[in-house]
Length: 371
Image (tube, rainbow, N blue to C red; front, side, top):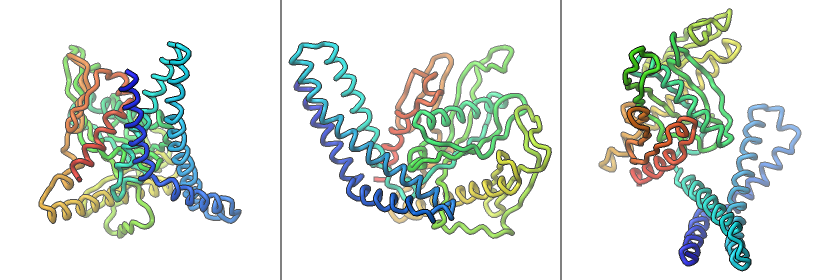
């Protein structure tokens, strides 16, 4: 048992060393010093947008350095914890050391997965759009369940989110929703969720309690930055304004503040109604439209590269028809990923945001496809 544990500790040390090499703490430390100097400049806040970017990046770099150095400290403490517990014959201390070993193993595994995110846009924040599909009221309810699942996942990780738009269905659930996950690498992390999600359950809306299959589509795109040069001529966009509505079609605003943008060349439609003014909603909607057009460009570039390489694996990833995952609540309880085969019988936990095992497996799968 002790030999197996020592081997596990050596393997963890090798993995963490590899992660430290990729993360490059020296480079991060230098960036931290530069960011701290910029943050202390009293003139920084004359440009609110730039100031927020600097402080956000500063917070991320600090957290990343602390995360890696703290994991190294915990890993180096483990042999001592076992040595003391065994020397004193303390079974409770041994069990505590085992719990710490499991925790460190999980944390290093998560950090290792992060190092696999090396795509052009992986470091970006993510715009997530959920649309109800086939299945009527059940599909609208399913779309709302998915939205809650992703927001709870972000909450579990302390990732800030902002809901841009929620279009409620008449009876229950939502027709669509758009929100942003505001943390570095959110796009790379969630990109594997892009596609179709299928729910099988006894319908709570069927008075005969029949089994119902429902679908919802998840669209994940990277947040656009100023360097992306996504130009959208005014004559390519149709702008419609309307009154914001809440659950059941109830009006929540007495003015036409909600905005719908239609990109005529591609047919892409985005809406935003969660801000108070039409100007704010239009700005948010334009951000989402730019993000979706950036994703279109990314896929076109991927297809061109795939054609040059003689493969379509990378290019086809992320197509809207891709089935991502089945969520079966009846006649048995099982969530199973279509591409990786990863599954869980704890459907309640998964729908409450415990999706890390699926997310990490998808990242590894995507890396294997592009490698």
